[in-house]
Image (cartoon, rainbow, N blue to C red):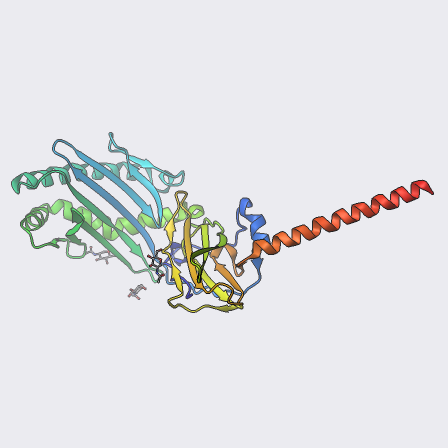
Length: 355
Ligand SMILES: *[C@@H]1O[C@H](CO)[C@@H](O)[C@H](O)[C@H]1NC(C)=O
Ligand SMILES: *[C@@H]1O[C@H](CO)[C@@H](O)[C@H](O)[C@H]1NC(C)=O
Ligand SMILES: *[C@@H]1O[C@H](CO)[C@@H](O)[C@H](O)[C@H]1NC(C)=O
């Protein structure tokens, strides 16, 4: 298959990070040594961007609003909002030291005012337009920094899972994204809050990138964390005339990975026989992926799954289909040889004692 398009990664962002080589963690090391093959791999580093994003969900019920917030640096959730106090919760030891205490206090105050006013104005609009409860507003905001130093910034708001409103940071204007009275009303209303717009513009145009650089500096070890993939190959037989070879790769970090099937040592090109999953998250901030190749049983070819990942450096994992049988027969041979050697030693010892 074609390599999975490596997603852009903060790791490659020139604003900070230098590549380091690390051994895989100990629990993977044995497997790593067994499976490792010296194959040159071209790492075509994508133009990476660094991302600092803030996600918010407001679920409006009749008599209360359920609020959640989380902030991410790349795919690392580093801060959330404490449910009852509304204070910022710092989820990694490097988060709080990255900014001066006064700045955290300032952000927390701005944030509380924002939440308060957001809920108040949307609640009154909901009443005005007789919107049935419950309804949901979801916000995504933040900035993306590119290696060339340019950056983009955004604030998008969705209402019941549809685009609703956006903030044009450069123009400092709210723009409705829906042809409905509610969107028009909220757009009008938000555009009258000039203090809010000016603050938001500054936060997104200046503060976001400044703070991102700090977080990248302080959170470097988390961003550079590498977990080596563990790959297994097994087969399924959905029909007697079809064998599905499954290459399951899991436990890797960061997200970009390249997985290919080899038929007699040649890479199988993309086609109807090949089916791949998307890269899915595990609970421990590692990822999993699978690639499935349909083959005819007993077609006489040899198959292997090849996995390349940043944690492996220039080497790849190569897992041949049926390798467990080979390993088993080698194991059995060794046991037989050892038994024979022991028997021979026993015979010699016996003979010597007699003579
Ligand atoms: C910087 O890189 C981004 C992403 O590759 C690109 O969209 C943008 O046009 C570039 N800006 C400049 C000034 O080169
Ligand atoms: C955003 O920040 C850049 C760089 O600091 C500045 O040149 C630009 O004028 C700012 N834009 C707005 C709309 O404030
Ligand atoms: C690929 O796998 C998905 C999920 O198992 C399945 O729904 C789809 O039909 C498969 N596609 C092909 C071409 O086998």
